[in-house]
Image 1 (tube, rainbow, N blue to C red):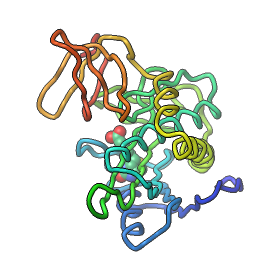
Image 2: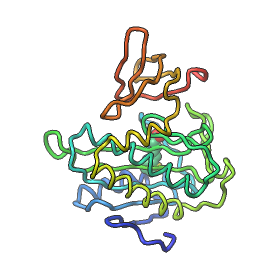
Image 3: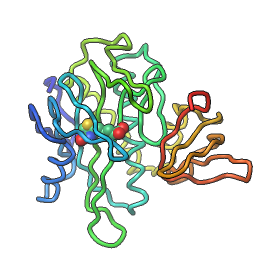
Image 4: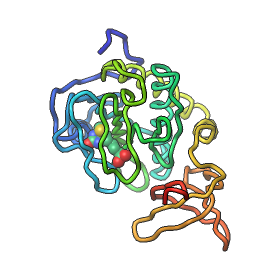
Amino acid sequence: MTGEALPRPFRLIAYETVGSTNDELKRLARDGADEGLIIIAGEQTGGRGRRGRAWVSPPGNLYSSILIRPDCRAAEAAQLGFIAALGVAGAIGELAPHIDLRCKWPNDVLANGKKVSGILLETEMVSGDRPDFVILGVGINLVSSPRDTPYPATSLGEEGAPGISPPMMAAAFIRHLALWLATWRQSGFAPIRDAWLARAMGLGEAIQVRLERDTLDGRFLDLDADGALLLGLPEGSRRIAAGEIFPARAA
Ligand code: BTN
């Protein structure tokens, strides 16, 4: 990478081209790879995003997947998405301190109001309610971003921070991720939730939530103890476990 040693237990395999770093790492995880294995790729030919979308992956941006074997219930594993988002925001904040960074529920990171990073969290269960492993798939736009996305996208280069290479960003991201993971394991979700809320886009404001089959307009009240969004509606508050949010004015 940058010559910088990774914190334990992280270790890295770099590919020039893969279909999807998440798929590659999933194969290794099923073969028994230990927690902390990271795959990065120079480009992806079949990058995947949330909600079945493609993640267009030309050279120059960071495409990474990290293997975690958490000792928790399946519902708690979703908290790892918030941990990854804090790791991304910490790394970008370190390398490009002039950029305004926000976390957008559930797992996106915004640079000056546009999406600069997306996270695809995939959990495989062993038995009952315990995850065998979680793959944290993290894309960070360093030099280019797609047009015509549901939410406007950007890259660090486009926001006035050129010259950040994928290995530089990967090293900073893993350092920040390791710190937030250690906090989670020591103190639970509460400090993660607080740090995420301090950067949250739209907290207390009117937002639109797009669900699989429905769209709701309400106020972003809070996150609950599991990371679900609490949406204020005329009839009361509603807990949203999965969806996509937009500012009310852009909706
Ligand atoms: C999103 O839709 O916002 C999530 C995008 C996640 C993209 C990353 S890039 C590295 C990893 N491999 C994939 O195929 N997807 C994730």
